[in-house]
Image: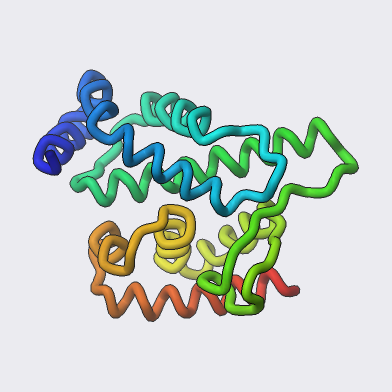
Length: 185
């Protein structure tokens, strides 16, 4: 099945829109698990549901042009990043409608920051910190997206970014330290 996915990714990247239509049924279950992973980090009261997130992802994927993804892992890394953007966009839209309410919060455990066993973080503050991290070190930012939001292992993250697991671990530690400082400020 991975071979089918890789072949369809190559066709989609080559400009064949029907390749995405054939790809989606093959990856649908994993995309739903990825969406659920994103929602486990969301705070209570979220108005978007995992199914709606996957549907919005399909819409955004279908509008992508010249996407060069050569492996299943890269596809899911790309999908995870789009899901994060969708969630951030959704939070911003809700905030603009409901001015004055508390900003949306997500929970994260010590795997990200190590500051507390479990802590709530403003999603928009986290997005801002990730943007700062991306400006300083884009690879570290990708690692956070893949590990924290995408739920990928060290090995899978290394495969997606084409780097060694040791580099992933080193950058993951640096990214966690950066985000802990940025979010505690």
